[in-house]
Figure 1 (spheres, rainbow, N blue to C red):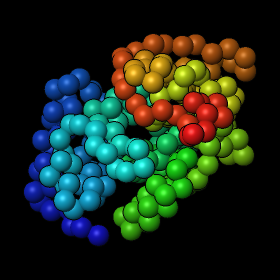
Figure 2 (tube, rainbow, N blue to C red; figure 1 turned 120 degrees about the vertical axis):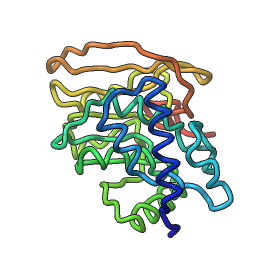
Figure 3 (cartoon, rainbow, N blue to C red; figure 1 turned 45 degrees about the horizontal axis):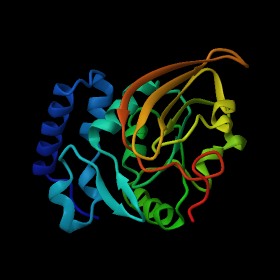
Figure 4 (cartoon, helix red, strand yellow; figure 1 turned 135 degrees about the vertical axis):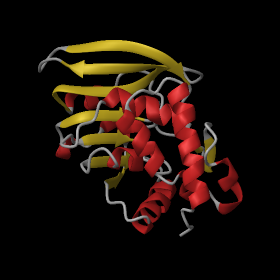
Length: 219
């Protein structure tokens, strides 16, 4: 376990100010970014990159998301401390830790077994305790539904119906939808048992959402 030094905290403060300049307004989200030691999600050799506002490879064909993307998606969730939130794509665990600063009720599912085991060890060593699962995130966690909020951290070809069904009425799904090159961020609100409203937002580029309701199984 590497230390979180005064220098690291200073770099996080600078990152928070950069995100504020780029348009992130929710002070709770900015505070959460300021509290999570992002360098702990990097191998030692790559730690100088930790507080730059960019994505970075973490192995297994996956990336740790750009801090702006993490803050942007988290801001859209409008999390309350009592919300139960489902994250699709645990990845490095960084986004998961940001969510944990806003609510203790975080469920997260990772498709890749190698990443899942590595991240579960990392989060345990950091004293973080989300509910972690390894499996097909595109199908959600029906046994734990309904959720107040669902966050998808991979690009989907279409809105996954299983996730829509696992939203509480009044709850929202934040998900990038598009082709393999770019996706449009969407906020979907469950207005009633059968009705959903959709809002299309900024364009992003994510790794593909694998699984039955995503891009299918890797070949």
